[in-house]
Length: 285
Image 1 (spheres, one colour):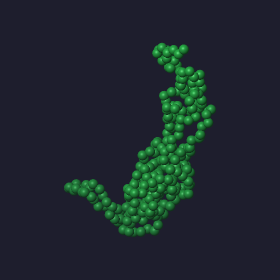
Image 2 (cartoon, rainbow, N blue to C red):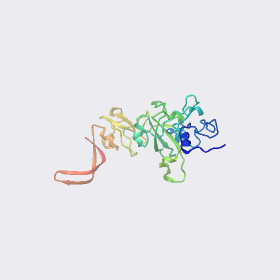
Image 3 (cartoon, helix red, strand yellow):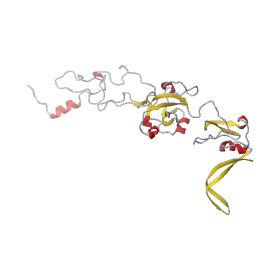
Image 4 (cartoon, one colour):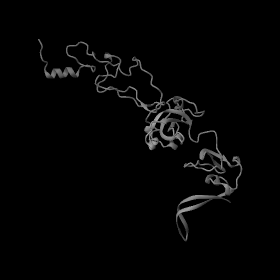
């Protein structure tokens, strides 16, 4: 004969039931529970921190963490994270979020453990998009970057990852990080090469020159600074001061004097004050 349980007794029974379920009239309270999948039927596993796939540039998440709102009862099967339960090894890719996230290009390239992600500019220079953490097995410094695959490239913090553009229709889309497509090639960081360049070539890149010590001149190649400081006595030739067109090359020569023109100046009896000074020419000291 079926008989209804008092409300208080029913609540007491429910509160003491195993986390894996309470079933009236069933001796096996674990029926229907499968820890081999995502855990409880009505819950989702909390994913671990995302890892950056070096081939696609996208974050990928791997199962783990806790299974709210109930604790796992090992009597119902192996609990998630249980050493007795076979676990697929996770890749060692760099974390998607961390100390490299949001860094500007110069800071990214100078920070150990961080690497630059660029979008292939085709006939134009590659476009800096994001700063990524190196593979957790790295960082590696030194050696060549050319020819490395996506995974090996991601171990080096002195190599950049160049990806195809995933955007085609919008002209400005290259500058959007969301346009990062698949890995295309591994390349040396801008300015990170074995060629110091020359001393007296004109500079066409809009970038800050390296802070070179006295009697050295910042190296220039293809109109951009290479990051090297070349001793004056190792420079190609010795042109007259008046023939030097690069400001830093003029400053690096002790026998030359850089001449400047003031911008937005105001003058009084004590002299002139200008908001800026623009290099005009190089003159003999």
